[in-house]
Amino acid sequence: MNTSPKIALVTGAGSGVGRASALALLEDGWSVVLAGRRAEPLQALADAAAARGATAPGQTALAVPTDVTDPDSVQALFDAIEKRFGRLDVLFNNAGVNAPAVPIDELPLDKWFSVLNTNVSGMFLCARAAFGLMRRQSPQGGRIINNGSISAYTPRPFTAPYTMSKHAVAGLTKALALDGRAWNIVASQIDIGNALTELSQRMTRGVLQANGTTAPEPMMDASHVANAVRHVAALPLEANILNMTIMASAMPFAGRG
Image (cartoon, rainbow, N blue to C red; front, side, top):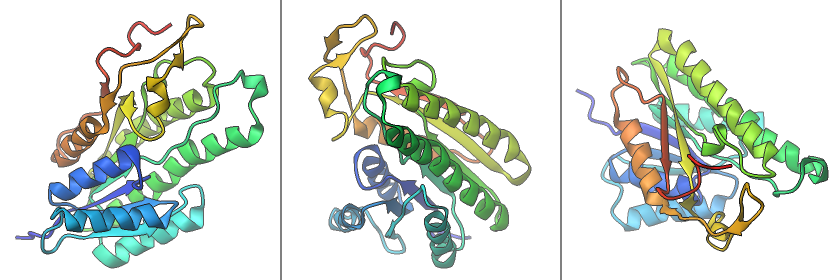
């Protein structure tokens, strides 16, 4: 019987939801590959996990600096995973960026391409590489968890690039869930609303609403998202949560607009 830790990859692991999720998976006994653009926070997370006793004998928190928008960088990441572990059981496809909340005709095109390249192409590249490794490995199969957003369903004012990107993620998740059946590869999407991170802190001071007013919004701790990730990751491959929405209970979503 193989008692080695299962292997998870978290992109955007250096901060926010990615960092919280990586720590949660480590606490659950996974070996976790930490991917992100900046080496320093990744290594700091690996060191913090060891200091907290979140890694047991046989476990690893492996930092691999990666630019998910660069096909060569993504390939190098998955080559490192295959060489070190020989397999991947879960990908939390989490890396993402946003754009300034301005009317679409005022949005600098470099901001649009940044959102497109990270949230769509970057997520596709990581899913593509994970899919290939999960097909080749033995035993075959694995789980891809995409970080969606409630913006995959309903936009905020002046968020066309981000909203478009997250609608694309929803399509990718469904396609992966369908196409992976032959190889025991399953796909899930966790749609997050108002998790408190360094980037979302501004929302506590006021966010533009659909009626033109600006108002602070309720937030939830990012640990709740991490708990959702660890729950989906722990499911056997015969079961799947295709879509999960986790959000601050009182935030404007069901009645948004």
